[in-house]
Amino acid sequence: MISGIGCSSRIPAYTNCYGFHGVHGRSLALAAGLKVTRPDLTVVVASGDGDGYSIGGNHFIHACRRNIDMTYVVMDNHIYGMTKGQPSPTTEPEFDTALSPGGTGLRPFHPLVVALASGANFIARCFSGEFNQTADILVEAIEHPGFSFVEILSPCVTFRPDEKEWKNMVHPAPVGATDDPAKAARRIMTDDGFNLGVLYRGKRQPYRPEFGAQVADPCELEKEFEL
Amino acid sequence: MSKRPPAPKVASLADLFALAWQIEADAVERYRLLADQMETHNNPELVKVFRDLARAEGIHADEIRRLAGDIDVVAHASRIGGCKGDGPEEADLSAAHYLMTPWHALQMALVGEKRALEFFTGIVETTKDAKIRQMAAEFVEEEAEHVNLVHRLLRKYRPPAESWAEDPDPPNPLE
Figure 1 (tube, rainbow over the protein chains, first blue to last red):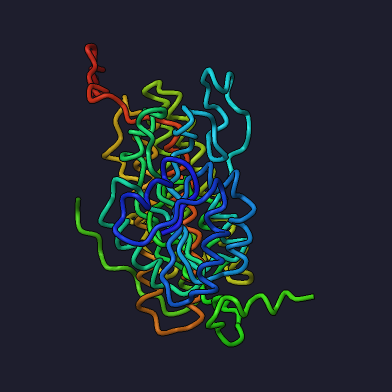
Figure 2: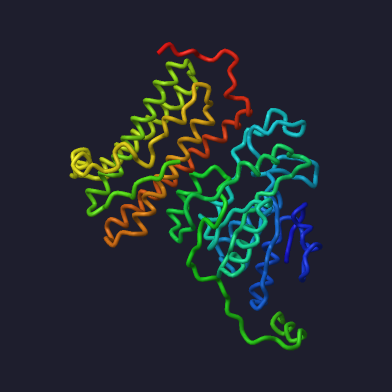
């Protein structure tokens, strides 16, 4: 379990597995390095909407493009909660607070569309209040080959009490997952942001770089860098 | 809720286009009737919602005629009878209330769109004809998009208070 920085990224401390609490926005870079060198490991990456889409936005795009076999879980609460409520890339434009007077006026980032367009091989949306479905989808995401992206709508009841209403707004996606990116794009682009379920199950081959013989003694590595 | 009759048999692409067109045309008619009812009850907000829904369904009906190409879907629909009067997308007139809100109207529309989605999904799952399956799958995508659209519209309206139907001075019909 690898994470960046933020409320979501404290999760390695709460899970019973090997964890790495990384630096802000760089969880995917760490995870990609780990997975290509240790393909035998199951790698799950945890992030939030600030860590994952703003500071780590570029890593997100390229992780989807590379399609390394790992699972990226983003707990999206549409706010920077840990730093007291600044707007994040997924905050609604009309979010009007002392920290964003008059609202941001900015179009929110659409992570699922970005993931699909960039090449993610599995895309799903869950709600933290629907924990059984979320658990099932996480299992499926981990088992699916390639880069799996799971957005979990996770209300921040401290700085976004309005998000308590999400439990009444979520609903199952009207149709099951597709393996056709064009169909998936159409469905994701037209939805209201509250469709739950697996939305895309792609068939791309994961990226698995070939390495030479394993180096038994780390000192031998020095030879590779001799001038 | 009354049990719906089994879906009409779809033996050809012409049948499928005719049924799809009939479903949209019936929905247009129902939404117009509901808009007229709301006009009588002086509920202008609902008049606008139902007229908008009728317009949207009319656009879908026209799109189906365009997709059908040379097939005269209107004539074919009247020949095969289809599901006239009990189409999956038809709003339930008996569920209308003179104090209903746009939220209620959109819930009615959502039920209709979901039924249409189930209808075409049923055809995809049961037909043995590859061309019919392919076209019905297109209609499934269309209807899924309509369900998404209604969900998006619903985000503008909060569910009304439980007392929404209370009227201290209700209308007193003379007939």
